[in-house]
Length: 318
Image (tube, rainbow, N blue to C red):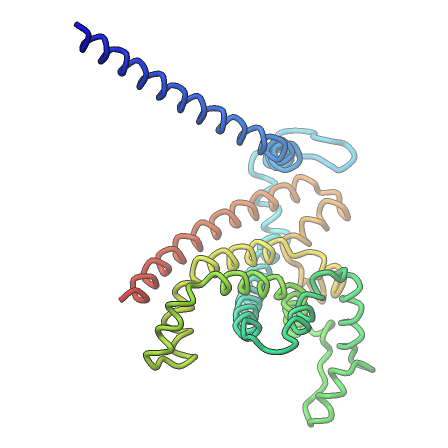
């Protein structure tokens, strides 16, 4: 009888302890949700609601001043693609490929170089971060001066080595290249910082073991560093791609979308339709298309790079 009573008390104590632990976890969850609630509310208010409103408005005829006038179905989508929206998406694609490749590769190479314990390395790290903190309008003015076909130093250098001068901002073939170079210079410092942070987190014992086994710098980077960096590369590629798909200020400052639309990206086209021509329905339609493309590309990149990451980890562990 006493043994049964003791067992009952032990069971009740165990159940009580379990309930207390569960209450503690519930309080932790509630506290966590309470912390993220302001950010979630602000994101929903200033990002999600305008996004949903843009998608809704894309099915109506409207103007910047007059509001919505009537349901038009998919007319805004066909009109935006036929009136230059499709070309702007193609320009955005070309810009994105060039920008992402250059900004990612430069960020990785310079990140690897700056990860070395060299005297005065902080000065070099600061130099690559400076373009990030200077306003794009100011740096854009500097680039316009450097690439001026009459007195710019770039064309003077080309002429000094016997190469023909290039009208960087008025030649349809050169204008987009100039914008890509400028955007890369202005942005790749952010990728350098991210790559440096990822390199600092790599296991040093693994790299030291490979060095003791006789692996050179190139082989260590190829067989150990790059496979371990794949998650960071995936994140950087996705962030750089999103920045490329939204490029606007660089276009506005350097070329204004010209010449003959060769640098009119989707974001600049949306701005022109909404705030210059007041075709808000067309702008809403292309903004929706651009959003869907951005989501699709991001998901595809994450899946592809995640697969390469898994294969890379298996190869580095072999």
